[in-house]
Length: 289
Ligand code: PMV
Image (cartoon, rainbow, N blue to C red):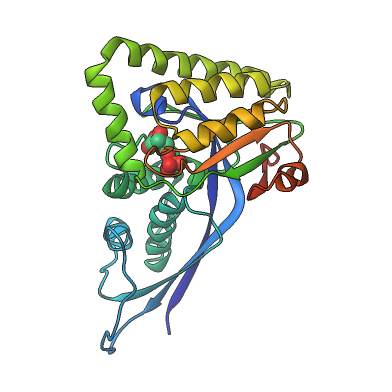
C-alpha cells in the first residue's frame, strides 16, 4: 500500500511574539522535539470513526498540498508540547507529505507560503513566524513578509522552559486580544510593540557574540506583561525566577484567563528549577546554525 512519511520539528520563540504580527522582527529557533506525519492510501474502506481534526487543519493542509483529503489516511505522532509549534508542524508537515505523495518538489519559500496560509485557519492573523521556524530550522531572524535569515552561533544557548499552565485562550484569540487593545490604547500599545522590536534587535546582536542575554530577556518579558498577554500566575512565577538572577519571559502567545503557557528562562540550571517544584524541560538553541 502506498505511503509517505515526513518528520518536522517544533519551535521556541526567543523574542518578538505579538510584535512580529505588526512587522517588528522576531527570533525563533527549532527545537529537538519531533512530529512524524504519514499519509497512507485510503481506498475501499468505510470510515467507522474519526479522531477530531480540530479546526480542520489537516484537511486544509492536504488540500493546499494538492491531495484529495478523501483519498488518504493521515497519521500523526508528536512529541512537540502544546504551544511549541504544533499547529505549524501539522500545517508544514502535511503539506510536505502531500507534495511527496505526488512526487513533487517543494522549495522552502513556497512551502512557507502554503503552511502560513494553512496556519491562518487556526491562528487568524498569524505572522508566519511559527511555520518559518518549522520549515527553515535552526535559529532564525524573521520579519513578516520581508526577511527570513539564519543566525549562526559558535556555541548553543541552553534555555529552560517552565510550565505556567495551559492558556484558556488560543493563539488566534490572543492575537485578536492584542489587536483590540491596540485599537483602544493606540499610542501606548504602539510604543510597547516598537520597544519589543528594539529588544529583539538587541538580543540578536548579543546572541551573535554569544553574550549574556538575561537582562534583555527580562526587559522583553516585562514589556509582554505590559502588553497584557501574561496572566497573574505567570507574572508571579516570572518575578520569583527573576529574583534568582535569571532572565525570564513568556514564549508564545501567552494567556490571561488561566495559565500563560511556558516561560523561557536563561541562566538557570534545569535541576535547580525542578527542585523549586516547577515542571520544566531544557532546549538547545542555535546549536546547528
Ligand atoms: O504559536 P504561539 O503561541 O507560539 O505564538 C506565535 C506568536 C504570535 O506572535 C503570538 C502569533 C504569530 O503568528 O506571530
